[in-house]
Length: 447
Ligand code: NDP
Figure (cartoon, rainbow, N blue to C red):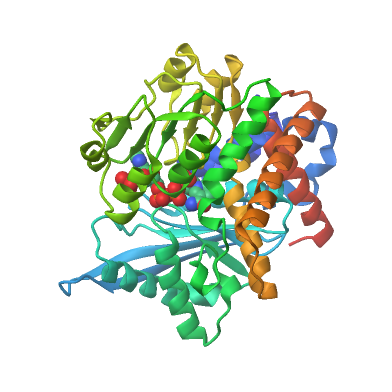
């Protein structure tokens, strides 16, 4: 949808004031387009600089991270933490360790998090952080030293009521453990609710590791049911082979689907008899190898180097690696091959043009801020357990996750229909999140 003149001027000003941040511009542009019908119906939502405030982070921290590798060589990385909005609760969102991380990437992720976290209804604000540190090939002790150096600055900016980081690309429970260990050492407090995604032995929650991947699949199940389908006997292509992808594959298999491909930064594996989650876990999690290692263990699998898996025919696609990994040409091929649904496990993995192709072809398309919200929702449950020094069972927590995903799904559809966009999950997610966060901003007064 085209922007009206006032919103165009606002968007142009955001681009001017945040140069060289294309991912951030992309995320803002999508939301501004989605909320056009809301602004037409409620022009007062432009008052008091509400949109300008929504698009300007409350705070942005950048810092130097100095650490030594196993040979004693010194490395200097850059650390980031952006607190975008605390209108609904403490800043909440993951840390990403990847060489591609820069301020614009962190800001796009934190901005997306505003709407995602609002959709959960769990009283969490939005933040994101990370570093351009590249963990690949690093030893365990190098990872630990990096995490300790990173937290030595970050600790002063976070806390259970202020800002609660979690994992993202390159940050799993091992890294969260090292980060929390350093936080505990510096502050002299076992404030478990300061970080989520912790290992169970230091206050983590059951289901948190599985939550994003399982949550996406619960969302897909609801989307397909809406169209009279189920996951039984569907073929699925998943991209990525990390936390989100691995757990999505487990749950998809459990629900009767066959996952025929997944990928990592080295290429993809294809096996029409189905990817084996146990072997994938062994190769990626235990051996920390690339996917050619999978093909060496499973003779029916074919490894295709340096390519994404979008040319493989399937019913459902769950892109779960990184932003802008699925473009317009990929979307055209997928649609031609009989695709019926897409659910983003990653944040913003489909380009705007790819999303247009899906919408025009009538494909059910769920944006990451709705479909992958299960991770942050379960992080909020981990915060609750930490606050009450309680531990919930796997099945109880999983049930809350499944309920949350169904209610996000339904909220998207109801809101989209209210604004004459039936079946448009992008509009539904952005408008629902926008209405929730702007109500809170208005209640809090100017800040
Ligand atoms: P992981 O680090 O566990 O896995 C990321 C996977 O994606 C790896 O297989 C990695 O390959 C691959 N990958 C990363 N960057 C690229 C790239 N540029 N090109 C090709 N492949 C790439 O991360 P997560 O699974 O946690 O996160 C995946 C996505 O899901 C991200 O967009 C993240 O923001 C999003 N997300 C994650 C949540 C969570 O709870 N973890 C919550 C909500 C969203 P390799 O193994 O070779 O490095």
